Amino acid sequence: MGAMSIWHWAIVIVVIALLFGGRGKLSGLMGDAAKGIRAFKDGLKDDGKGAADGPSEGVSSLPRTDAEKEELKR
Image 1 (cartoon, rainbow, N blue to C red):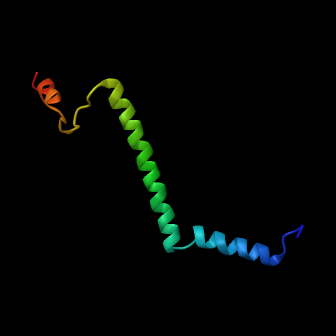
Image 2 (image 1 turned 135 degrees about the vertical axis):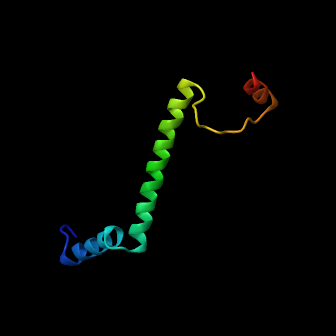
Image 3 (image 1 turned 30 degrees about the horizontal axis):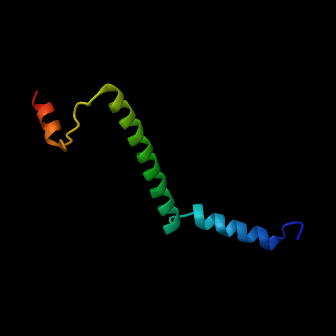
């Protein structure tokens, strides 16, 4: 129990190979998750800049209330 035997190392290597190796479904899923996290972080950075500078150009969000519509007409 104190030291890892050859079977413990074999199981660890198989698990690592399944998670990170080849073109398997699991490695593709992990890659997609990483892309999603990166896109989320980039979105947070963009929201932080836009809130400090006011409404950014090129953003085509629709007004939600009548007061916002009136403010945009001015």
